[in-house]
Image: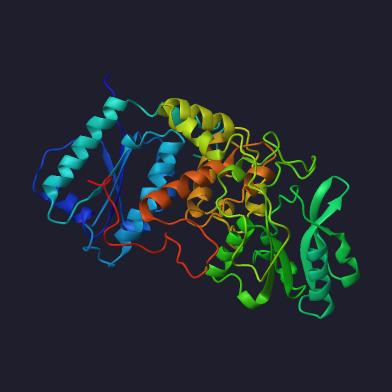
Amino acid sequence: MSFEPKITAFVCNWCTYTGADLAGTSRLQMASNVRIIRLPCTGRIDPLFLLKAFERGADGIIVSGCHPADCHYNAGNYHARRRFAIFRELLDFVGLDPARITFSWVSASEGNKWREVVNDTVERVRALGPFTAYRELTPPAAGLGGVR
Amino acid sequence: MNELRDLARRLLGDGTVKAVVGYEEGPRGVRPVFVTRPEDADQLIFDPRAVQNLVTFLNPRRPHVKRLGKLAVVVKACDARAAAGLLRESQLRRDEVVLIGVRCGGVVQSPEGPATLNEETVAPRCGTCAQRVPTLADHVVGPELPAPPVQSSEDEMMARLDGRPHAERWDFWMAELERCVRCNACREVCPLCFCERCVQDKSEPQWIESSPHVRGNLAWHLTRALHLAGRCSTCGECTRACPAGIPLNLLNRQAARTVAARFGYVVGDDPGVAAPVGTFRQDDAEEFIR
């Protein structure tokens, strides 16, 4: 059986979620590997969310929100941009290939761009293969007693 | 040395401070000391074994220290940067502390060993030190000292890691982080880890697994490095305090490298300069975002 990557997408409520919704209502065909988690703003996306997604079996991640100057809260995406610029290079430093994570700005009217972001990410992560390196970190007891 | 002792005697004698936090000779090398009486000022010493960052006693997580009253703290330039961090983040008022700056010629790796500085004994972080006299200090004492000998600086260690492919870097770090026993010495010794409730201690939801296992260890140390980005004074105390010998300062240096390259910010001892995380510029580089 061919490998189907699991992608977790952390998106902001105002732009990318609405853009993804537009892609859906427009009946755009795209890869079905993405699970979307909607947050108020990219500024609300703690980098720990990304680590937790990898811990729970994600092979790739999308982080997406409003374009610069478009943030519903004026500055959330600017703060997120600085935070993820640092975090991304930190992950790179410890050997986590940043190609597993896509950062993008997708506005509410960019249903087509969302499709491209999704399809490109799925194909890129498919080529990288399952993220076994992270899964191998799982403690032996994990998964028992409801502890995931 | 006499300059330091005379100053401490004067500050305690005229009631400027209740205690001077400095270094003394202990049974196992140099250790921190709180001198509260002027006649005890001769206990104070400063030599290359004075590796500890005493600014950690000013951390607001230590209210019992604050209750002593106003303190004078002996600071090297790297320690003064940590004090600047506390001032910058409103965790300390400038009139709450007297900073006694010491001219530094580099420190050794261990306070327990000999005080001789040479290429074998020098702390790796001293090899990249750009500031050996604190400018934030109220007083600066001690003789001018030559620059520390350099053998293998942390920058070289990082360059070696940079040259390796992702998988090798991953294996290197997982082997290092696997040894972490989550004793939290890195957090406790850090002058800038001052959250009243650390994200690592939160269990509902538990974002960072608390058992000593490599998966939670990775999440913890990445989070700590991220939270210290643009703040860490690179005093290297986390690395020194680590009983497992994990080179934690490299993670902090990596964050510092990004912050310097992208935001043109280097942690200094001027509390008036805003830290780069928590602010932004509209034209920040975003080549990694599509």
